[in-house]
Image (cartoon, rainbow, N blue to C red):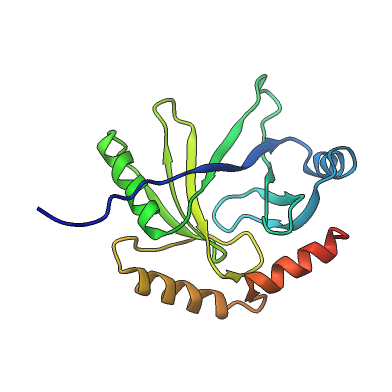
Length: 185
């Protein structure tokens, strides 16, 4: 019998993404009315939509995300994903194992540079992301696969190399200070 420590993840809901019809109007509303600060924007690298990341916390790159592409003929609100912050790769692996055990067949491992994530759907096809922050920052959006079966050292080394290759690279601490300045804090 193995003497491995039992991992108990403690997920926290951290951000919400919303499909919208008019991204400029919605960005203005969430900036002017709600008080969020746009932190990054751009076209998604894998899908033909525009993305605006928003936050009110300099420690969080985004707490809310607007995504273009909501069809005009949809009479209900679309939730793009629910995301939960965890602490490390061990917790990410544990959640992946639990999802597999629950019968989830497709689990995608993605790095965004500033975060390592897994994505999977719940029983009613709602997208869930669990992720943890890395010590690096690159402008968003970024989406690249990574291998969660590699050692912690290999995953982190490859992610750092990926981030440092981006011209917008900085440490997470440098980005946090920059965001605090952007938010007038």
